[in-house]
Image (cartoon, rainbow over all chains, first blue to last red; front, side, top):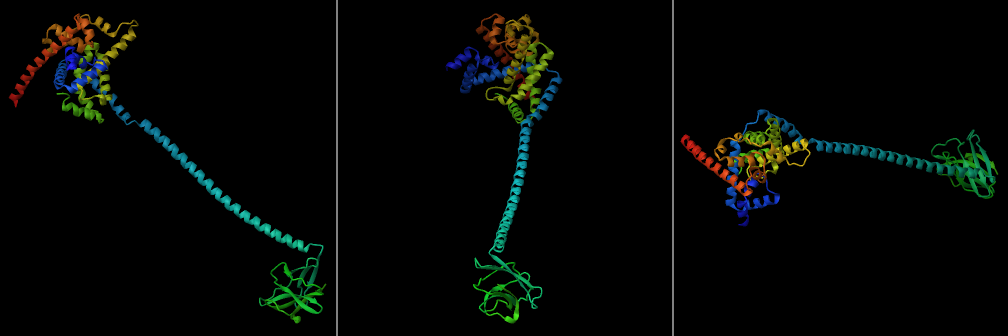
Length: 251
Length: 187
């Protein structure tokens, strides 16, 4: 083998032993050693001799050196666990954890605030709707009452309804009749007030008058001469019970 | 025989983070390595620092040691040698600014190398063999520098080293036979 011959002739094993070879030469020697048992044995013997010679030439160092080595190795052992990157990582994790928690809290707060606002808005919206419809109702009523075509008529109660009073708003132009029965005394639940128009001596029903309503819209009858209120059984009658006449007004 | 099983176990323990294995390796090899370092730098305090540095390097780079490539001692020796050479080179740089290499300076310091520092079987070798071993293994010279130092051709110098090692092995061999005989008698 070429390499083996070269190694032995040039004494490369000895140079390899002391680490004097270039990297290239060293790997060449290592390869040869791996492949050639005889060469390996020769190198093993050389190493053994070299070590034995080293032991023979040994000079005992003072004990202080060992103590110093122990000192410089021991604290390093602790450093070997290397807490620095670990603690940095832990610090970052903590910061991330806390900020995520903080952000989560914020988000949750915002969420619940939003919900509260939503319910408040809904409630306000409902109130506005209610107010609006109430306002529309009221202004409608006002419009139907406070109108130059409307004639307000007061019906004062007789001895059957002392101090009773009802107000009728008659609009001949639009053929509308609105009555406010609030001023009439409250009747037992089996009785009701009913309004009639007198047309040529005949009483024509305009409808019942529940006292719990502020304005009752009634049927407009043409050519009525007077308006009359009677007390009738609950639900109203087809013909008026004239004995139970409570009030009337002439048109 | 490469790294002994005992060393392998110590190295495995050291790799797994057991520092007591380092102290055991120290007990076993610090003397031999200190012998190398001290002979190279010829300064007791400096040599102690360098021995410490060497073992810290061993501890830090033990995972770079490959038992299949050679003995632990060989690996540790290279670390000790390089550490010492680097330290001497730095020192030279601090002292002088001209372009002389560190080796030239060592040679100046060592006009009369003190071989008496070497001991044991080496002393039974012929003087030129002793010097060859001392220059290459205990003074930090490369083979190339050492042959110039001794004033002989590189080939001749290499054969000095080889012959010296061979003779050493023979003396070790007879010693081993002797030890073996003693052990046999004891058994």
